[in-house]
Length: 374
Image (cartoon, rainbow, N blue to C red; front, side, top):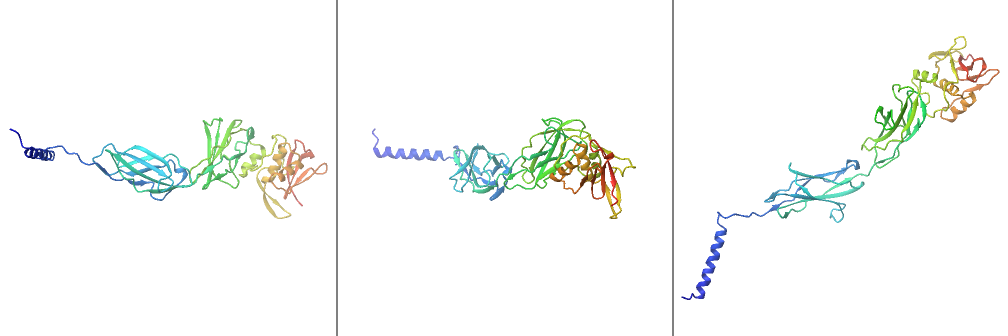
């Protein structure tokens, strides 16, 4: 029997409706929509100010809230403008953190600039909006040049307690107070450092004197670095300087008793062995540390003082008296001493004493300390 066209149409509609009803049946599987909210920025916080030395910087977000997504990854963007027209770094495919936060480390950024950052999450074919944008600032770079060694320079011979001295570093940027790390080692590779010391920066130069004797008759090596106390930025060390230690000279031994450096600045040339301290009490008061009394001025004073010791040390190094006076005044050790030559006197006149060349022999002389009476 032939079906009428109208009946065929009605059956088709009923079948379609039944199929729809079947698909909405509770016993049928469901497919939920995927949604991801924007992550929340954590670090750096809004308007954070960071030191250049704080790099590399880690940026972190609170993980995005999501529905129906797995395998979530994050994209972080950093720019020099809030519209992100000038991006300087993009970190893609950052796996979601397991502690509720996701963090990525940035590459070093230029100092002295403002930066803007945000992040978004992607998962299950959906991408969140970007997080709120946070600005942070990186301060200028602190650049510290190496200090310049003053002494002892390579090949010098020193006492067991040498005065290590450097010119202060030059620096750029917002550097803070400086300290200096001095190191002494028994090899130029500094694999065995035997003395270290940290010194506060001085005026124009900074120095260090060991508090105990270094090994005698040894070749040692020293270097120094400048360190910015605020940022921890350190200079490269000075060029390594070698020096050889020897026993204290006569003048240095007495200066140690006084607790005063014999030559805190410029060091005279020459090797000791050309003079002897006279301690014959029939010829003078001797070189032992003592308190003497200058009767004409009714003044008590310590003898020897550091000026007396410096003159003796210069004679011990081979200087003649006139050259010793000239060297003292030309190298930062002002003196009003006067030399009275032989054959009449052969004495050096100081404020309260004469230092006399025994038997008026000046070369390789024995020098006696004589209290002035006029």
